[in-house]
Picture 1: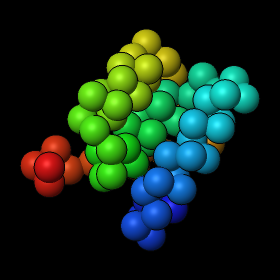
Picture 2: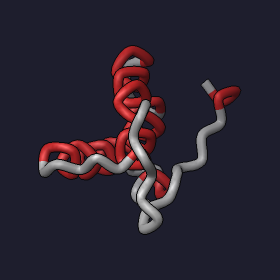
Picture 3: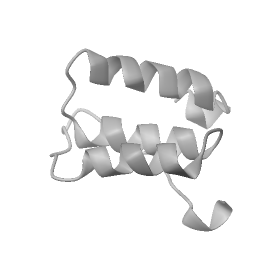
Picture 4: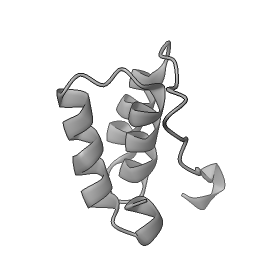
Length: 71
């Protein structure tokens, strides 16, 4: 939701905190990549996307919308 409001850095901060607290939800890592693509470097975003590999998405979370053509 924070990214939807254009608050990408806040979203990334919250998602990083969730990971620090032990989240293994695929969507947490993927959404961090999406948020980071909107303000950070491509390398940092790709690192977050790679963190999602092999993880399962929780049915209680959602995948952020990502437009690969936007950047």
